[in-house]
Image 1 (cartoon, rainbow, N blue to C red):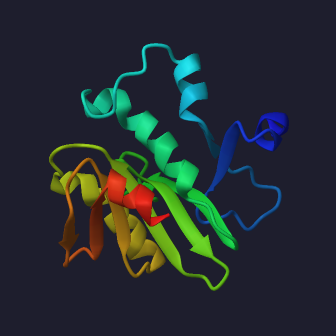
Image 2 (spheres, one colour):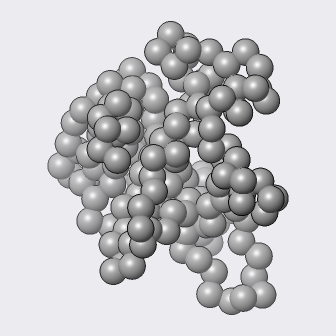
Length: 164
């Protein structure tokens, strides 16, 4: 795996927050860094704008993670049970958690859909509650909105890509 990472073909993200014990094994999220490589591996890659979100969600995640880079940034992912003490509760996740050296944390969730439902914000809201993030980003197909109560900024994919 480290050869693929050194060749910049894949990118590995550790779980947030990082496990404090060195003996603990935290699973990773691995993504391909290039849409062309991904399309070659998974034939029949559809057009982003003409396909259903179920087919292009992973493509958009690949595209988004390729621009989340910067000096002094660490990028993780978040996945946990809604109630960590009860494994029967739903699993909530955030696609990317960006953290800088000063401790500022911004969770980023990719929801490439025409319409955003309240349930789409569940992972971001849980993360922000547990980790005291100031705000979260929701990357969407074409929705631009500020969810004041949740402190979540929804931005269209093209705006997100241009911001980096």
